[in-house]
Image 1 (cartoon, rainbow over the protein chains, first blue to last red):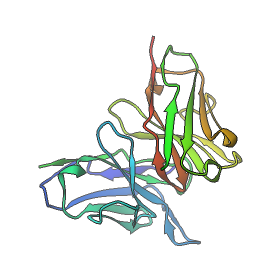
Image 2: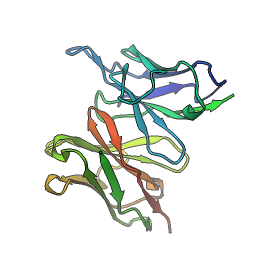
Image 3: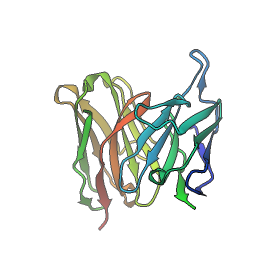
Length: 113
Length: 116
């Protein structure tokens, strides 16, 4: 199974500042035949189901604000929020869908400083 | 608008069984793979099971293999999870999620509590 490890576990950032969350997979999730990274990012606000933010490691889902961006390839990935807004308080998860089981990272709790 | 509605969650004793359902609307259900993902109270997301659009491919997490069975009825736009030999550690909110690779639609979840 592919193990997904996020860092940090929690993060406090001031409003308007940049937030960066990292995700590392135990093996590459880059499919060489199509050069796509099978990596997604989700946001989960309190009491709500997860919501897809980013897929293929860097493609923003429709309706997601452009302050959210994803980067990385192979085994190392980053979710960046360029200017933190109050509504971004949530837990963020990465997930690989390269091979089943489609494992999630342990989550990163993002708060306002 | 895409809607996924889970049902069937309940309080059940250890060793008992439960069947969860997920009813889909707003999209062509038969075109999508479907999944169950659970979240224990205060914990992170745990992938449980996957079924392809035609039911030809099915996968389970090791933690539920041999106890849970995923199935679907494309004519009824419904996804199911039959859960047997339930344990306390199966206590969680169970979400169904649509996927075409990534998971781009989720239900609100249904709570399963396993306790005596």
